[in-house]
Length: 447
Ligand SMILES: Cc1cc2nc3c(=O)[nH]c(=O)nc-3n(C[C@H](O)[C@H](O)[C@H](O)COP(=O)(O)OP(=O)(O)OC[C@H]3O[C@@H](n4cnc5c(N)ncnc54)[C@H](O)[C@@H]3O)c2cc1C
Image (cartoon, rainbow, N blue to C red; front, side):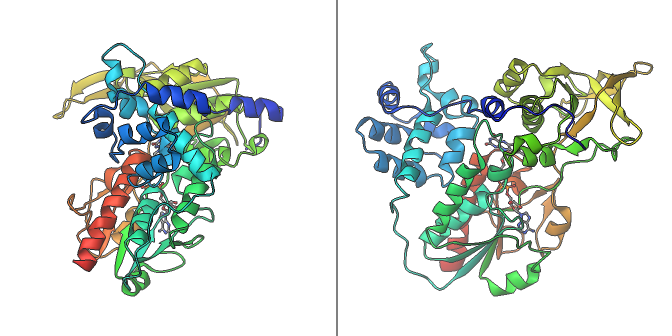
């Protein structure tokens, strides 16, 4: 589609996409670190899926030992810059901070972590970890998202010869292409790829397994394989008019926004977003920041059922996004391009066996909203075709089944982690999975 809104000035785009959580200064980092109570048995550390020793890294900031602090963070989490900037800290570490119970502001753990890791990259990634001598074994990793990177870093330090195969020309997975630019820019994700490469990991981009190389070829040439393939395409709406110009998937739209040549990203004046998860909120706020005049989120269930975090919902409301709950799309209207969306009101039905209420259309309540762009954000499909081509791997309810002890799939030589095993969670979960799978692989190959 053509870009319908008038282009904004470069300054205006930069202002619209400026960081939500700017970096701390030296003084503010020291002051913030001194507020930490360094709790014994820290609840923040337990709340972090990668179990970073948060008290220890904050203590090291207060004594100006920033590289020591970076080592504490990185040994638990190889994508610590992404997590510092994009983790939902309000529901993880900061949400668990004991200061909340005292009615105080929690420690800004995310921003302190960013302070330390920014410094680490500014210092040129000094060597903090020893790489063990080669053990002669090789592991192939499919996917360079956070799970693949974490698995690769950990295995390389243990002495494995690691190659990451990435189908895209630019590595980093959704850290590079998905996370909203007002949280982090593409360049941050690429720094983390460089860190993993500095341990000797080879990253082959533009190499899709199942496309450029068959899975079997990889399987026979490596001692083990890790699947960090994430999820696939956005789900289809399956309504009339979905093929019209102006209808786009949230992932494709967000990927365009991440190129950061914002003036070239097509966006409508009136945009409808279908779905109310975190990806939908990102697409909505990004469309607004590109200059859309009106952005409406349509969700067939009620506000209590939406999967987006409260803080993301608040951000969208602050950006002026309009929400229509209990509203489902029926048809997208237009000749060649989108002119409107026909919707129908929904009402809650009976709860199912798990207590989740169904929703039912209310006959005769159809209405049309004039829009010139529709963004589909109703989740991502699993990579069914690829996964079914991997012998022995079990695929249940859209997730690869693993042994939770060691991340091994039904095929003993194949391990998996990240979105492809959990159906789509956060970067921090993928980072943890990749690391734990590396230890599963190490046990399998060396013990
Ligand atoms: C729009 C969006 C915004 C998000 N924002 C946040 C956020 O703010 N904070 C947060 O914590 N989480 C966020 N997430 C979730 C987070 O990005 C994911 O949970 C995380 O990236 C999953 O990591 P992964 O390694 O499993 O997969 P991915 O990051 O998806 O990486 C998978 C990689 O595998 C590659 N690949 C797939 N198949 C093949 C193949 N056959 N051959 C070679 N390569 C292949 C892909 O190209 C991709 O690079 C967001 C997700 C989306 C969709």
